[in-house]
Structure formats: C-alpha cells, structure tokens
Amino acid sequence: MRVICPHCKSVNNVPQKESYKKANCGKCKGSLLDTKPIELTNADFDEVVVNSDIAVIVDFWAPWCGPCKMMAPTFQKSAESFPLKALFTKVNTENEQALGARFGIRSIPTLVVFKDGKEVHRVSGALDEASLNKMVAQFI
Ligand SMILES: [Zn+2]
Image (cartoon, rainbow, N blue to C red; front, side, top):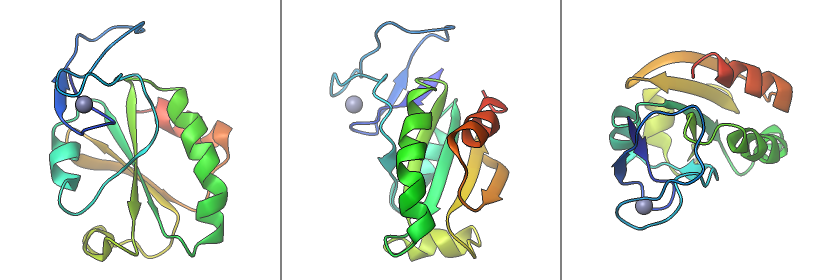
C-alpha cells in the first residue's frame, strides 16, 4: 500500500500488516511510524490525498480559532494511535484560503476524511480523543 512520508511527503510502498515494528522512508530514511500531523498546502494537497492508500484525516483550522488550538493536542494524540493506518494532516485555512473555499469550509475546526482520493466523511466542531479515535477507526 502507498503511504505518505510524514517528513518529506514522498510516496512509499509498504506491505500491509497488522502492526509495524519499523518502517522507514525510502527517500529521507525518516520513520514512517512517526505520527506527527503534517501540514498540507494548496501545492501538495492533491498529491498527498490521491497517493495515500490509508485514510487521510484533514483538520481544517486557523491560528485565531480557540477550539482549534484546544483540539490540537487531541489530534496529535489520536494520530499516535494509528501509525500507518491513517494519515493525520492539517490545513491552515488562513494561509490556504483556496483549499478552504474548495471544500466549502464554513466553520472551523472541521475534520474531513478522505479515502481513495474522495471525501467520505466530515464533522464540524472540536472532538474529544475518544470520539476522534472512534471516527477514524471507521475508515481503517
Ligand atoms: Zn521521507
């Protein structure tokens, strides 16, 4: 399956397994198990979403949004629960207004799930960790 490296955003092919002890990027050698959410921009958004065989969770947020900032640690923590199962990403709608407009983001935070390049789910408003994990688990 194809996964996006969280460090250099290049596409890697890894065998599909129940769990992983080790998996490194073929390009930058960084660990693919590193689950820190990655920032997407208008320039690389499609490339990442289309080339990921695992679900891509996009957190549309903005720096001035209090609930977004409150949810950031939860989002990070949830990402750690799904190494190579789901890709956690963030879009700063203040910098990337074209993406916000394209997906009709009217309120933030809004979480959108993409699978096979298509939107399959979205939810507006901050989620707690249990709800977020439950939502993501539906798509792995
Ligand atoms: Zn890499």
